[in-house]
Image (cartoon, rainbow, N blue to C red; front, top):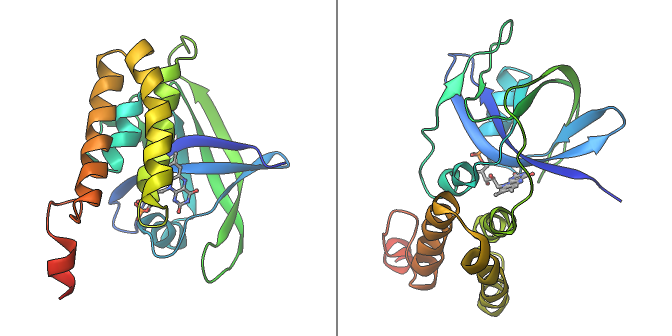
Length: 199
Ligand SMILES: Cc1cc2nc3c(=O)[nH]c(=O)nc-3n(C[C@H](O)[C@H](O)[C@H](O)COP(=O)(O)O)c2cc1C
């Protein structure tokens, strides 16, 4: 059984430009595996600077925002680390890549935990947050999943939104649903017609 922690991973390129992306880090012994699909900025950055910060946050707008072109979330420096964390992290782990299992599709970066810190209390589970996370994963796979499956899952997830969401979860859900609607209308994330762009 694989245990995966969904978090926001920050990386940096050799010029210090920081990138943030939602990723599921995979538990392995006392460390974590980061497995970005090719091509990805996270992968390019890990090749240049073999450090990443996993930020654990309950602000699901950041997951939804990263998938809908809203990547400008406040960051905070970490002493002795070239890569910052999310300001909104309840806690974070600094990860150092110690080995890479190369793969044409999804190279696995085995990381040791260099340091960890907590910043704010965890205030409990919320169904709407979990539903936004699930919709974010669906949105990251829109091109791979059949429309029927996407619609069926959204119908179920929407129940948790209706019953338990606060304003932040509603906003995050709205951003993701806008992307789903664009996808079904044949538009890309910028609202451009995908079919026209291909012809
Ligand atoms: C909760 C969640 C977990 C994800 N986990 C992964 C992952 O493990 N590997 C991956 O390549 N993409 C994953 N994605 C999709 C990436 O966030 C997305 O493709 C992102 O743009 C990565 O590419 P980038 O580094 O170029 O930004 C995940 C998305 C979500 C919402």
